[in-house]
Length: 388
Image (cartoon, rainbow, N blue to C red; front, side, top):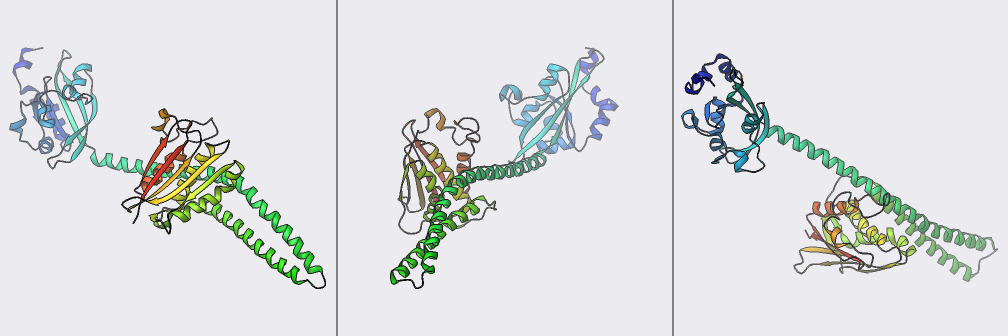
C-alpha cells in the first residue's frame, strides 16, 4: 500500500466523490471506518443517532459507540453479524439488520449496508457504513403479517368446525330418523282413532298421550337441528355471559347418539346452579366439542366419559374436566398435542387442528388448560376459565 495512504488520514475525506456521497446520503446515518473498526468520519444523522459529538467518535471503535462493547459485535455477541467484518472478509458490500437502543431506551432496528473503498491495488482502505432506521417499516410488516395470520387461523378454525359438523351430521341423521319414525307411527294411530264414529274416553286419553310424546320428539329434533345450524355458522367473536353448564349440555346433546352407538357411557356432575363466564358461546362450544370428539375417537371399543364442572377453591375460576378411559397419550407426544397440524392419526383421519384450536380458544378467554394422561390409561383435560 502507498506510504501516503498510511500517513495521510485526511486524503479519503478530501476526495470529492466521497464528500459528494456523504452529502447526497445526508438523510441516512453514515459513518466512515478503517479496517481496524475505528471511525474516521460521520455525518450529522449518525451523530444524532448515537447522541455524540464528532470529537467524541473520531478514532473510537464503532462497536463501542453503537453497542457499548469492548470487541467487535461478531465476537462479543455470538449470532450478531458484523457487516464491516463481512466486507473485510469478502471484499464485497455486506448487509445486515441490527438492533440498537435509542437514547430513550427503546429498541430501534437498523438496516445496515457496508461498502468497501479500495485503492489502486485493490486493497480496502476505508469502509462506508450506511444505517437506515426500519423500525416503523418492520412494525408495519409485523402488523400486516399478524393480520394475515389471524385471518388464516379464522379460516382454519372454520375448516375444523365444518369437519366436526360433518361428524355431527352423520350421527344426527340416525338420531333424527328415530323420532320421525315414531311420529309417523303415532300419526297413523291417531288417524285410526279419528276414523271411528266416536272415540272412547280411553282413545282420547291415548290421543293426548301421543300428542305429548310427539311434542317432545319434535322438540328434540328441533334442538338437534338448531345446534347443528348454530355450530355451522361462522360468526365474529362476541363476548357475553355464558352458562358453561348449559353449553356443556348442548354439546352432550349433539354427541349423545354417536356415543351411544359406540357404547360409551357418559356421566356428568355439574356445578349446582349457573356457572357463568364471560366468553364467546360459539367458540367455547367448538372447544368442548373438539375435546368430546377426541375422547370418543380414543375409545373405539367403548368406555366411560365423565364431564364435570365446578368452581375452584378461590371461587374465582370455573373448572371443566373432561376425562375418558381411552388409549391415552404417549409421553413423547404430550408436549406437541397443541402444535398445529400435529396428529398421531393415519393420513386422512385427522387434521391436527382440534387441540390447537382448543388451546387458542382457552387462551383467548384468558384461561388455561391442563392435560393428564398416560399411554393406555385414558386422558383428562382440565379447562380453567375466569369468573367475571
